[in-house]
Length: 341
Image 1 (cartoon, rainbow, N blue to C red):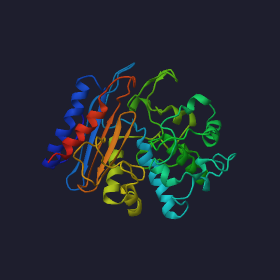
Image 2 (image 1 turned 90 degrees about the vertical axis):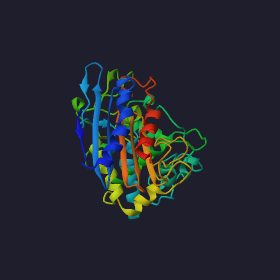
Image 3 (image 1 turned 30 degrees about the vertical axis):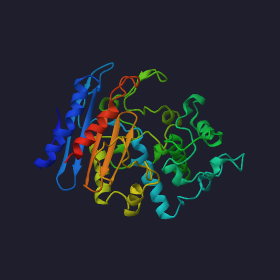
Image 4 (image 1 turned 90 degrees about the horizontal axis):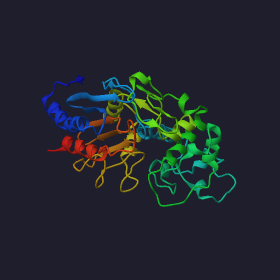
């Protein structure tokens, strides 16, 4: 089992305690493998891998160098910081409608509700967009699908967590930079694809008819050939480096960090979640914690009060999502063990 151990005994005691449930889930066959990482500004960093990066059709071991499809962690590691940076520069106004950058959004209906949706509402998932839409089933041309997203008359409902919010934010980034998402800088230690032999495999995809490894799992992101809601790959140390940059203030501006911590609802901040009953970070997080999860089995939580962060990266959808991996309980248990007094 690979280990990167910090010297501080207190850190290692917490780390060992929190790692045990992941090891148990792998031993029980609920998850093929995973990597756990913990960083504390006062005590250092610890990481450990367990299980397999792939079990179908071949078996490969999980290591600290394994690349993960971070799924919706893309929203908070890639898209949110860039939108907040553009706002701080004055390039966009968070309270202005998306049409200030995407004037063709529902362009055939000047009174459409979609034309009134703001950047801030998208960051906080405070829009009427539906929770999910199988965009990839409407065609194979990525530019046609972009036009579809912009011109579709979307179902109007109560505010829910919706990928559409960040797909639109990604389209705004593309317009402002003049480049496709995949041609933008993903950030130090990250990429939009990875070596399949060095990646945690995800699903045996019924649409693409192959086991995915090193290519994005999310069907809509794959069909769009890059999007603001998914598609980022990274290792445990690249994720912890990002978290440490937020904790010590070197990763993004203080203003951006403040907005990431500022609630927009009882569950969400700008891009992130904050603690609420039964949230992914467990029941013992401090009020100064933000976090987010990814569908493939990933997650990152950052506690600004305790100056620590932890990430749980798994391939829980390998070889299929249609299996109760226990990932929800696993995430909460790990968070509770980290924060137990």
